[in-house]
Amino acid sequence: MDTIDLFAMRERFDNQQIMLCFNGPISRSLIEEIGNALRNYLSADHAHPSAAMDVFAVYIEMTQNISHYARVRGWSEQESGATVVVSRDEEGHYVVSAGNLVEHADGEALLQAVEDLAGLDKTELKARYKEQLRKPRDAEKTTGAGLGLIDIARKSSQPLHASLRPVAEGRGFLSLRAVI
Image 1: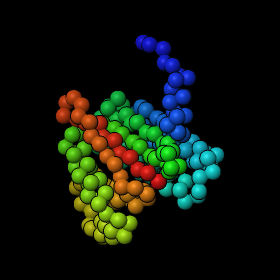
Image 2: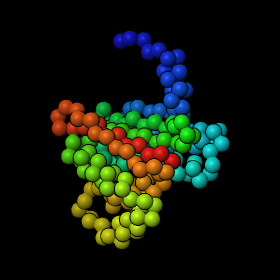
Image 3: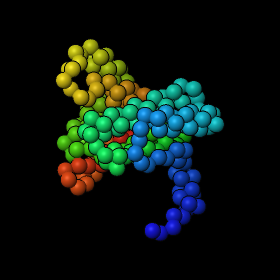
């Protein structure tokens, strides 16, 4: 194995204003610990309290969705890995990005949902959230009510962005990006 150039990695993280980066299997306790670190980073960065709350909420929603998806699928620790990055963009917005393996069809469905939400303004997102909240929940379904993605879109200052990169065995790597 080649030696990892940590200095070069640090330089790249600094240049891209990456505050937090995680790659690997994710568990409930790890989500909590990284969340605590994120809160500390946001506090040290003097984030506005409402922005800090939104960044934290989006991080939690994304990582819990990844953990839940892998658990429902019964995937191994290796398959259930996540890549999570919290950074700043050129305008100073916080950017929360998360990615994980998914069944390709599930990834396509999420891409469509993100695309549908991207065309909505804040008022329409609020209405969609309330509409989804009133829908009866199917007890047979293993997925959530769909509120989480809408809530992420509501907290975002720009439309959500998602991509799906095909990988082996009918799966893809799904990436979701929210700008707060």
